[in-house]
Length: 251
Image 1 (spheres, rainbow, N blue to C red):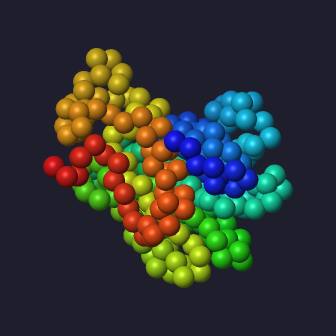
Image 2 (cartoon, helix red, strand yellow):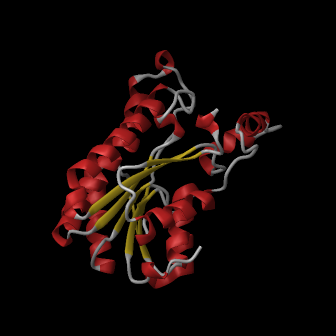
Image 3 (tube, rainbow, N blue to C red):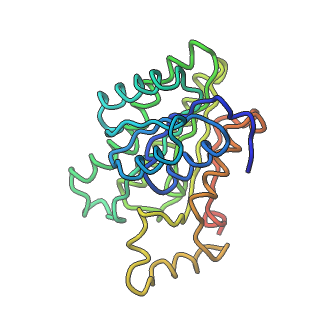
């Protein structure tokens, strides 16, 4: 999928060291964009740096730490001068723990990363976008933000929060040139889900069987949707939460 409009644009993305975030980073880099990444893991970021050199830069830190986000944004500006697109992709799972199996530490870890991290990144970069009256924010929701059963208590709560945050962010800043949407993936084969494929892979097989499309999706499929959502072709899409789930929530 090719979009010439991304040449010279800068994308700030969280969670780019692996999985969906890395696929998104590669998709934009392959379309001529500059990409600045923030992630707690460095190995995957180094690989991107080696491959894309001057068009990719990164900061190793956590979205749940306000200081890390602020420093990463300053380094993004130093590297590429401005940020045009924000992809709030970083997230963590809770192992499908129900509320009585969710202690405070797990709850805080999920909410701090999935929700507060999105809030920190958005609030850090949004004023920069508002000055230019132009910016695109794409948040990573989940089918767990639309229905039960896509995660445990903390994860489901966090993704419902992202859905609401996306809609309110759109409502507050749409008239100021800021376009906000979210993607709600279903079963995507990433390192985060590797446990489902271990051993005989029975869990992965069950998920595929329960998905109307009959399979897991690849991270590149989420990246392709992201390319479209951030493009001028999707300019009339505002405050939308788009499922990419093989028909899971339509059952």
